[in-house]
Image 1 (cartoon, helix red, strand yellow):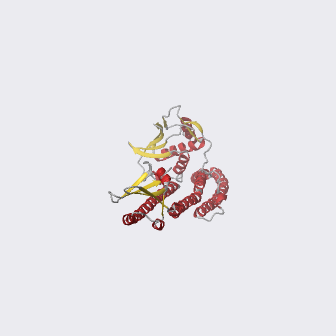
Image 2 (cartoon, one colour):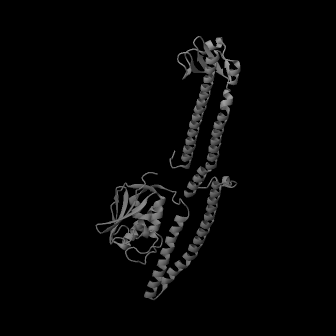
Image 3 (spheres, one colour):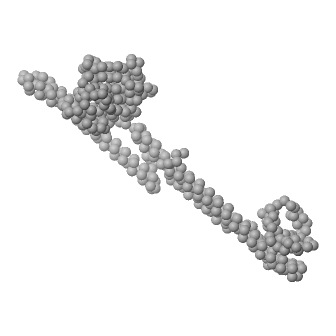
Length: 408
């Protein structure tokens, strides 16, 4: 069990409490036993005084001391050498005292010059140990019930944890209804979580609906604008309108990718074994470079398990940045990393700055994009269990993708 778990700490707490209770019970038993032994010691002194003075022991004194004589026949059976014995100090020459423990009962053996006298302590063992035993049992019962109640109260945390993990994976929640009626703190926390999930779901659906409608409504006029720009007779106006509508078209395309990434927690479920070199070639085709001016040193048999369209977008965006902000772009492979490199100045800020959405600057501000490229790359790679890395060496910017997933 995880030593940081609250259940581990709960088990440790109650195990410690149980051990301490049992130790306390043992010490109490020893104390009661010592008390009885001391009481018999005092009684034996009175008996010895009686014997020295009168030479005999009266039944009245024995009754007052809560003792009784043991018949000789029974005494013969009780006086074997085995058994627990406790010596008490007395006159060594004439009288001696000894405690005998037989079957949970206590006997007082008095050795006189001519005979042995065995006395039975008529103390009620049940009465003597009933109250301490009941107290110990009550404490153990309270500990057990408290442990059971706390375990039962905390056990829904496992179901809540499972639903939180399922929510993180984009799977349906299973235990929402079980927390509807509880009034303890865990139930209230669970209800707050499920209510937040419902609100986020409604907000997400509203956002996606709004964004899809917006993209649909904007795509048509942008397309018409690009056609009208081509019909313009003035070259300067045609070029200016073409640049404007091209920028709008790029923005719409990047927003579509952002919406696709945010559409669900696992939008890239269709994963298959892909040839990395074919992915790089497809990325080049989409950039209209057809590997012209782009170095490519990737083994023919290099594969990975991923969503095909998503990985093409990753390579395309990284290669597009390498062309925009550097010179002599190159795609290679190092260890288990795919590397896209290009000559250029190092990044002025940490990589995390450029993977935020709408970070347009790279080396110098450009007009060809809106800063969503690296954000999309990072999101795709995180969903595939890979990372985007960066380093600058020998005058080159190197962006790494990996480690590549070799198994499905």
